[in-house]
Image 1 (cartoon, rainbow, N blue to C red):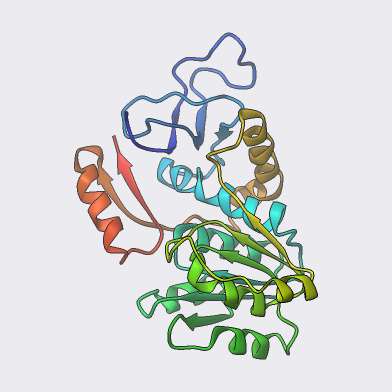
Image 2: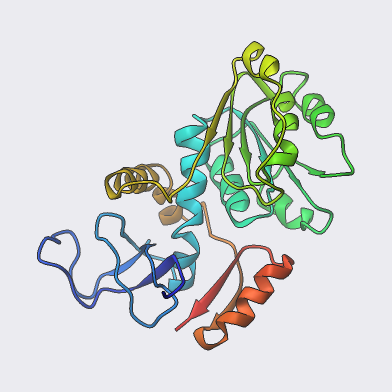
Length: 267
């Protein structure tokens, strides 16, 4: 099996059922087997490159920004004027969620991470408050920043260790959307708090979606976020690029968790 989920490039052939793309079009999207010079992609989830985008920028968008949009907007029901907490804000999806929230008019975005999470870079992207896991009392600080109300949406990349904090941080009727579990898959939930605050707790994943569901997801993403790429209001964050022949080196760099933004491979 060839690794890789994200790609961008020029169309060199199209299937008989494809009408919206032609040979020579520049496309980006989620696929499989992207660690390669040539790859296939289902036309229903492919997107055209924004006019000013490089291939690197397009590849950096392909998976993490639709994931962030689906968590924040579709499942988190985020809209302009709402407040957001992003657990693991310096992750690729966390950065994308921060950028989308700010572009769509968030009142305030709070993020958590480790001490090496490059808080200055996050502030440049619009993060209003950065809290360090293990140093700050996250619920106390979030309630202080939100005047005791809590946040409307929590987008969580950390998982089990922070689930109880999420329940305390979210406002009445708020939504918690779990995207990842880098901290572990198990945590303790106070069902009384969940019920009293009427909290919606949702998990998201691409792994169990049908192609029809993925098609709808990418259509919603294109509707809400693509215009920000076209206007230049939203620019994907890229940490480093490596030649395809150094894929293992790139993966080792990713495992060190010192980067900020996407790590890309060039065929």
